[in-house]
Image 1 (cartoon, rainbow, N blue to C red):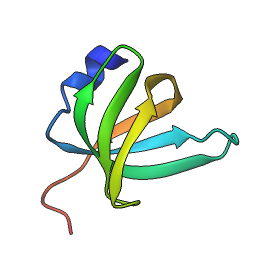
Image 2: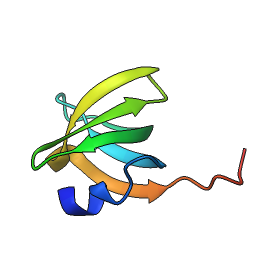
Image 3: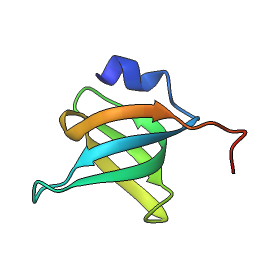
Image 4: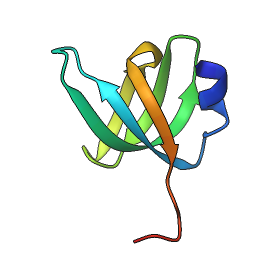
Length: 68
């Protein structure tokens, strides 16, 4: 999936993410860098940068910039 995530660098996306305690969360992020195992992104929900494991990103949806 990391190759697919590189296309979103610099564009906000919504993701479904699997937390370490097996809960799923929905987040709006802006990917800053994408690697083989992790992405470094700014999380708008938590208002801080985060390191996210690619294997725990379950779904990706581009954010519609026209919606508010």
